[in-house]
Length: 273
Image (cartoon, rainbow, N blue to C red; front, side, top):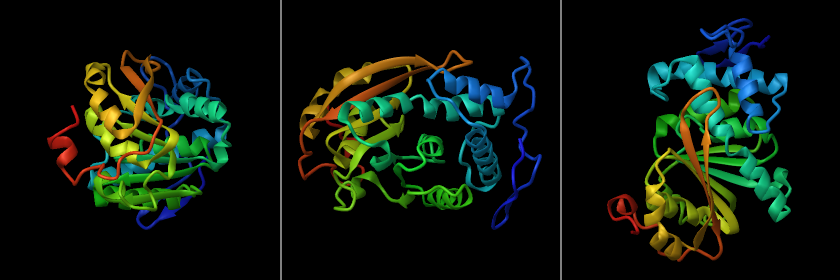
């Protein structure tokens, strides 16, 4: 793969720097790992998209030295646990598009607690015209995300610094999104209070969780209070691994009461259970 020079302040990627053709111990190349793994979710990556994924990975590694964006340093684990994990929810976004008869180019998605941009940026690489917003409470991570948006030339993509408890009351964001996503940043009742206020009526919240789904059983109060209903729980195994994940789809059937989300810290200290 050839990568053109990409400049952003002290960051530079030159042709040949990205070792997407490096062969792993089992004989699988990094690029094959990504492309073949994506196919497990019915996703066909073209060469430009694969190139962008490796530019993104290299960008994270460069910034990780000072911003501690991820603890995963091994390339194989990075592709499986960050990229393929993020792409695992794309079929559910497509399903929502078809069910609700929404043009995916006009769809709006918000990623709550996005960190280094997972799952938002991997989704954005494929959903080029979809409006994607990222929210994180750590300012340095948002600084990274804005640099990433600029460097990768991602259209219709925004990153905001702030807490979900505050932005959930902002008229510019409250009940403005077709889909909210969150990647295991809190227990399910807490995630529901963080995320459902952002979702339009008839929209969905996609929770990306680990193998333990016991907390789903204690989410009924939160669902009733916030106007949501669990539509589907699907267990998956990430390609090329034994890592079990659960994807939980929550449909929003009515508006969230105006007193939610509660003030910063309240949802986690006193969850709706």
